[in-house]
Image (cartoon, rainbow, N blue to C red; front, side, top):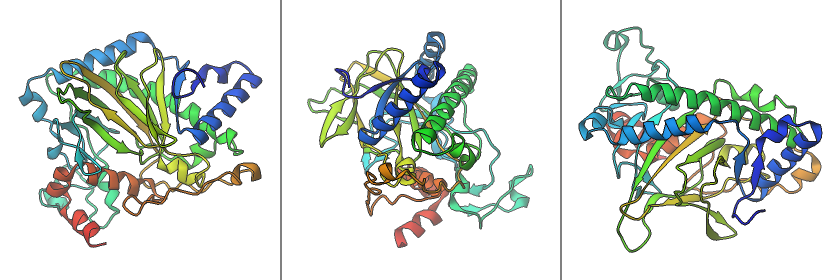
Length: 358
């Protein structure tokens, strides 16, 4: 542990021979067992790509309001597009941020009309595959919404996505080996990954008390790689019952595991609560979390841990208000419906009603 509140791991150790790779895997297992968070260096991401991503993010948020609202997420049944400041909730409270959500670019397999009634094939047109009887998480599959005034955003996001997917896959294989499984264990069970990129701006607040940029929560999926604008703090991680700062480290991502990896290891690895405190006005903060998760219909089996690791498994955290499902899509849908009630009410009132009755 350094002077920072989180451990620092160097991904390039995996390419420096068997002993260095084994050391990295031990450090990875320890960090995600004891903390659930760590800094990751040695990823090979170029400063030029980081600079282009930051420039594209700032350019997007500087667009006229009408341009951003033209792709507002309430127009997307798949929870894609722009969310205005105050448009997302965590733990039922408003998050003080604006963002654009970008997922896998796929054809919709569920096409409702506002109010939640599935469209018939004759209404959908262009070969859409409506399946009103399919699992609710099918509704998350669909196209992204891109700003017409900024075509370059799609290019830089695509490049960022490809680089981070490669980093995430290296981490999956390192985790598998560190837990006593075969290297391809997670690859075999992941299917076609369900990624999500959020480009987020936290505007400054002049309130005398800290404000909720994003409220305390655990990520619902498997793995998160967070890039933060250099020099901009605000991220806090819950350690030993206290909130500790996790400022950005030059050239490093902040990495954390989600509830699905905690479930797969039965609590041997731990998902950790974290939050973001809004900056003080006139400052602002840009961050770009990348969520790397299995296919929506993937069910990750519980890993058969070596005896010495299994003896340290603490069991999965139990929260009646936040159940952890074995199928990733159920976790993803739960999070989307809860975070964006306006989208849920417009497009998915049947799901909202069903969950309220359960």
